[in-house]
Structure formats: C-alpha cells, structure tokens
Length: 302
Image (cartoon, rainbow, N blue to C red; front, top):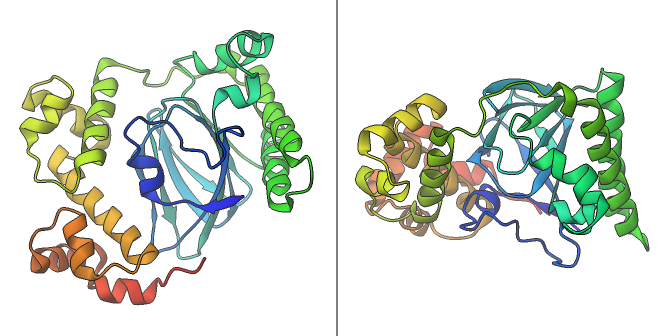
C-alpha cells in the first residue's frame, strides 16, 4: 500500500525505528506532494532504515552529508542508515516525490546470511557513505532509479507476488550502489561526536516539542553544555536550538492543519503554543497568512 508521508511519521519516532504497516514486510512506500504555500518539505531527521527516493515531478533541494543538491524530475537519492537529512521544495511547481523506506533485513534476510555479510553490511557500515545523489541523465544512475520506479510500480499494482518484485528491484538498486559507488565514497562529514550529539538533541526535541522545554534540557539530553549545544546546531543546521524548536513546531502545525480536522486552537496547543494569539502571530510571520487561511488553501485530499 502506498501511503501519504507526513513530517511526524518519520521525525517524531522516538526509537527511530520505521513503523512499517506490515511487520512481516518491513518496506514502506510513500508519496509526498509538496508545493510553495503548502507543505514545503521535511525537516532534519534520521532513521535506522535505508531510504531510496526519486522525484516524479517538480524539484526538491536535499541536504545530507555536508552537501546540498537540487534534484529535478527523474533524479533520485539513496540515504544510508542513520544519515541526517532534510528536504525542501523548489520553485512554484508542485513536487511529487516517491520513497521506499526499508529495514536492511528486508533485502538481506538477516545478519546470519551471506547477503548481509557480503553485500548489506559493507554498505550500511561505511561511515563515509551517508548518501548518494542520483541523476537521471547519468546512465549508471538511471539504472538505479529505474529499479526504484519498478519497485514502486509493483506496490501500486499490487498483483499477487508483488512482494517478490519489490524485494528484487530494491536489491538490484542496492547492489548497483554497492558496486558502482561504495569504492568511490566521498569523504563527507562523517559521524563525528558533534553529529551524534545533534541527533540525540533532535530526538529529544522531536519527542518533547509540544512541551515547555529549555536550552538546558536540550543540552542535557546529549550530555553537553549549553554552549556545546549551540555549537552543534549552529555548525550543522545554521540555527540555534530554540530557533529550530520554534521552526519545527510550526512545521508540525502545518501538518495538523492540513491532515486533521483539529481546531486552530487545538493545533496551537498541541504544538506547544499555550497562547492562541502567539500561535497565530508566529504562524503568520512564518507563512504570511493565518492558520485558518493556510488550512483553507491546502485542504488535504487523500
């Protein structure tokens, strides 16, 4: 089944384990439809699952491993396990993105198999390979992207035995990545202590964003000083912890306004804004319109 992705579905998962619809088939397939003036992307997040994505329509700016790259229709991306990344739509055209997010065991069958030891472990354990940007105009990349498309199509059609087809096409994409790109893995910003601390603090924020939390609590979640917490956020995300918290609350508010029938008052309260007028003012500054107008412009269509 193809599901509509929300920022909360990924970013607010405390254990960072993807909650697949069917545990016996640990591969989830999502689509997102982002556009200017509506939901414009996905905030910084990470997960233990692997991720393959391709842009079916429009353009998106993806950031990971110290690189920021524009992906257009026909381009794609691979994210390794625990890779911190984010997306933002570009241009006025609606952006339609397709994702396959899956546990490494979905392909390998488990750690005791030759598939894991020979192919999956070398891929997921390589810290200098957090991601790979893929471009449809490149023949080598197109083969990987075509495998993603085939896996997505198999899920959409849902024919008997489609699970075999999905696993086959995902396996082909990973094998191509392993053979073609792992030997050339660029020396990106590896999993430094600062990055690990940031991930811990992001987890804390994503889990407690609707509470009254302080900089001291954020820093304490990673066992660092207030100053080090500031350095982690400024150095990697280019904003302070409290700025990120404020921005994240508003991003979740967008999702609730579009995807639920909760009142504007309840949305504000559920996102940590105890004062309704403060929520409306903050949202207007963020989006250029009130929460009510934003909801009217972006009525969710399943």
